Length: 107
Image (cartoon, rainbow, N blue to C red; front, side, top):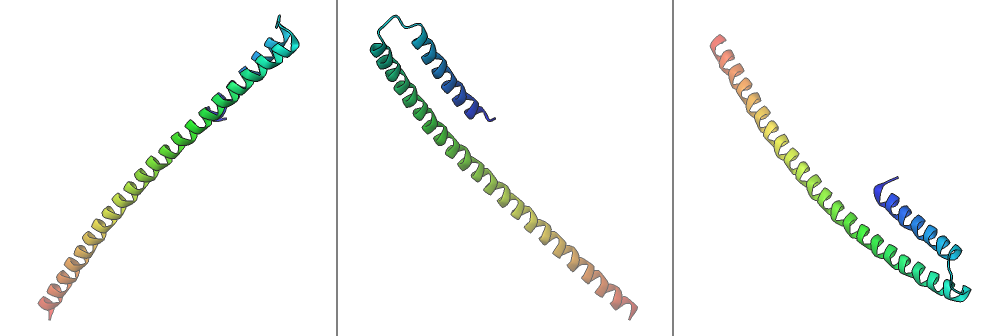
């Protein structure tokens, strides 16, 4: 499992365990206990939704940063490839010039 899903699972598990203990050890009437439990579950639900929204925002930021880094890597690779192509073309020209020079000396 990934860290965010572990964290979310922990929150949900904690909420459920807390709710179970609240029901088992509540000195209050059933209606009051249910109302408090409902309120707490609603509170946990809101917190969980806030956490999910925050994780989505962080994910978007990370994806954006990764895309930027990927674009930079591609650009760097293109520049290096262009440099290598230029060097190879210069080398070919040098070889052709040397061939022509050599052929001119022979003939």
